[in-house]
Image: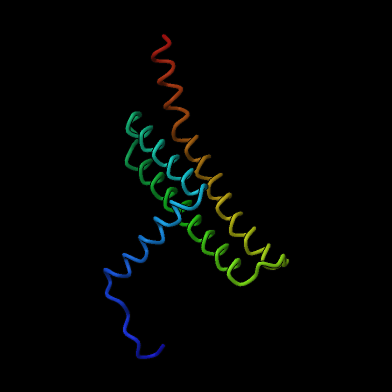
Length: 128
């Protein structure tokens, strides 16, 4: 590998975007994350969340979706290496999926902390 020229930066970005879009097309969970992100953005616009709340939301979007990309990469590599049921292959796949699950649960909890009070205030305003 020594002496090989790296591709231009724009091509590296192109490869990264190819990977993102391939995972969005192929993986149901990534499609769910994209839908949830869209709903949170709509809710954020509707409720007029603060800059800090937007930053929290965008960091959490990035975390969850990045982990989903890594999870897909781990699963793909494990499947490439072996089709047999092996304890270490299972551990690698389960651990990567667990990372996404933890991030998703924490993102949902943060979303509730941000949006529940705003939703409650909105409901109280229209109710009375």
